[in-house]
Image (tube, rainbow, N blue to C red; front, top):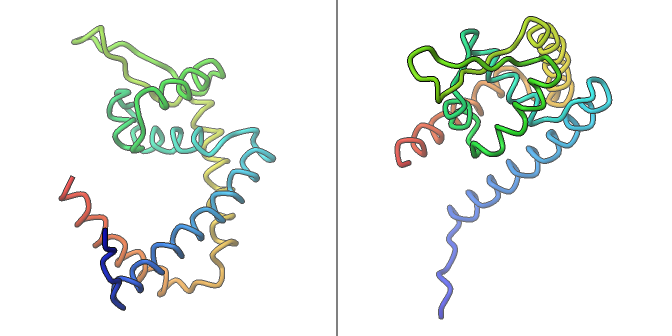
Amino acid sequence: MSVPAVDRDDRARLRLWLRLLRTTRAVEGVLRERLAAEFGSTLPRFDVMAALDRAPDGMMMGELSRFLLVSNGNVTGIVERLVADGLVERMRRADDRRTAIVRLTPSGRTLFAEMAAAHAGWIDELLSDVTPARANDVAAVLGVFRSQWESET
């Protein structure tokens, strides 16, 4: 079986992918360490709280899974622990008792606000060599890619 030749454009895209991946892994590693050390939290837990913070009226579990691009099973375990910790509440929908809406509790909102402020500061620190103009340019390029990719799925 022959392997197709990789042209210069393909190599440039491959290099971009590898740099994005390395950068993401490095930043995520630092965020994981800092969230654990300062808040006793995990990055997935932070992500669930962040999604719920954007939806003050709450989200159905399926919506939350789709928003986070993970399986229902992954989200369910995290939500269960957040409920047990009093940071998230689960409410049954009046029109469909089989489905639940989850949302941050007041203490969950307070904790998340602290976590989000620290997270923003860490990101600012970690990406301090990137100018705001460059950050906007890269975000715009990645936004085009995301829009193209999402339209295909």
